[in-house]
Image (tube, rainbow, N blue to C red):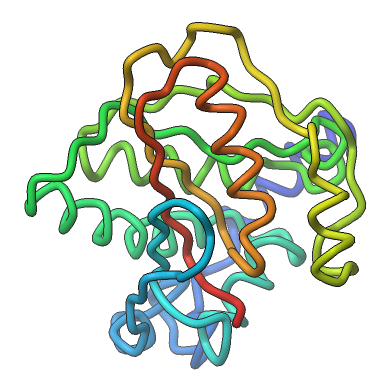
Amino acid sequence: MNDLARIVAWGAAALVPPHCAGCDAPGAWLCLACRDACDAEDVPRIGLPVRAAGTYAGPLRTAIHRYKYRGEPGLAAELGDLVASLLAADLARGARVDVIVPVPLHPRRVRERGYDQTALLAERVASRTDVPLRTALRRVRHLRPQIELDRPERLRNVSGAFAGVSGSLRGTAVALVDDVVTTGATLRETARAARRCGARRVRAYAVAHDE
């Protein structure tokens, strides 16, 4: 998608009155009732602490699908608020988080979609929690979509896919932000990249967990 197409897409999204992605009620991209239906959960067996705002099903699945594939970037606010509430709760319990880092998309994927959905989520989380945002990592290989692959293929697909500037996260406690976590392969590889850049601790937050 070129620059003109992106401008048109964003303009069209701004002109469309928001309707809830879950129940189609007017007034919000994801209404309060549908947000309240999300049950936060800890994601096991990932290799780092991961929390998700809900299961990838029902209204939340519909909202994420519209956000990622149907050109509705306005959903970043409501979906980002779900993630921000998880981080805020952990901060209130004494967790240390110095910076928020989005799981990066490849530039080609950003061009195709017209926006970087994880960056928008991370920006919202940062603004809601007052934790600084740092785009310290980049995706160095264009990958097949993880949704198309089985578990072993997902692990191979993301191996060595992320990099950053050495020392750019030195001494920090990092919170990664992503949209959906399934096997955890992407988050584990992103966490490795963050540690190579000097991060002392890494935890992660996602909108949904696809069981």
